[in-house]
Image 1 (cartoon, rainbow, N blue to C red):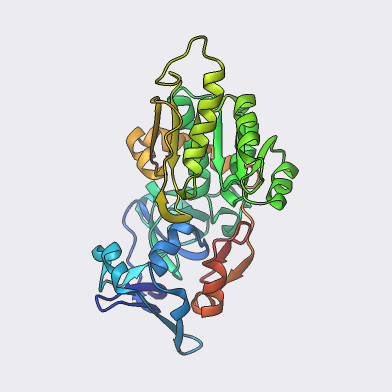
Image 2 (cartoon, one colour):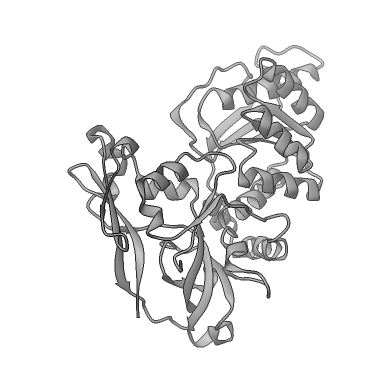
Length: 371
């Protein structure tokens, strides 16, 4: 049994190569299944592996319509960023869903069922998956509906879990009009958690208000800092998750939190408030430096946050509990929408790559390798 899978290679000479390779499908072990993959989303984290630091202006098509190839140049100064993967053909796609076509001894009851999985290399016609990294979709749920069952839903629930475990009561979230951001609006509302949503234009403000968000601020507004401070004051948020990464936004959030905290102080301190303010960077939509203008006292922290590292730290019981909620709310709280559904060959068309690599809000693409 063989199938096509999308592979990405960056050579030590500075070239990106994308192609479709025919590979054998392994037999499943006792707690494994083979999926016929029918839906795998293109997430920002997938683009990092798929395209790396290649120059998008140099994309060149080749091969045949059935087995296309793409090449692009990688600037030599960027090669050290991907030194660990040079000259290796790597499968792409961090999550997806499909139908079980082969099952190991302990998974025979799953034959024919739809299953979502967090298994590397999901941009493939078939994929071997472990039950420990999978969710059996409820009866009647399609692979398309379950394709994004892992990265965004687990991130949302782990953010709420982090808030509770660290003693915060509200959250500030940036790039909040994304698919993930919309999920967080729904989940926070269901859990009664105050949420401040930071977006990048007026249309996104309207979008989030339309799904029930109460506090939405536009970072391009001339009164952004005042509006953000007012929203933080109204919610009491002392925790933020920032998907932008670069620039001064994280610093601005800390500043506004400190302004609110200082208002509540009864005595002056040259060290600022004792209220701890925390920003976690969980994305890099801006790959530039994170700039900190330290106007927020000494009780603050900023650091990286990765959802599956967080879950691994807190053990399988937490992941199982969150997975159960995701499965139950897959078509409501954690529903995803997609701009377009494309096949493996279409995913290697330079014009299509240019479209999905923009990472535009509301422009999420879905690969269906069965097309």
